[in-house]
Image (cartoon, rainbow, N blue to C red):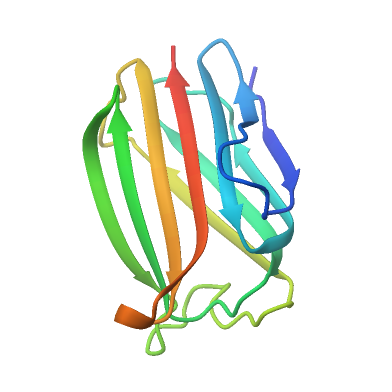
Length: 154
């Protein structure tokens, strides 16, 4: 049976509180966060992992900041060991192709993306994903979102 993850939340609580995204016989996922969004709606489907790992992620909300010149830093840990690090510049002035780029503070946005791990088999165990989202350039960057996602593949 395919289960869907549906989550409605408001960013801004203290990092450290854990919220369950989904829990099935195959996997458990939860997160904690701090940052600046109101009326955030997040869905991830399906809530399962069968060795392929393909998920559809949708979210919408109202940011406390303009969605321009963003920088995302992400680290992935497997059983407490770093397995991946990625830095992504997003919504830079020359590249406004993403559907949320250019959203101004207080304006509602919608975003959809697909995440695939089909190239990699994810072994059973604990995966932790740490994300920091900044706005601005270089020394003038401001941290606007900090989120931790945890996935336990059984």
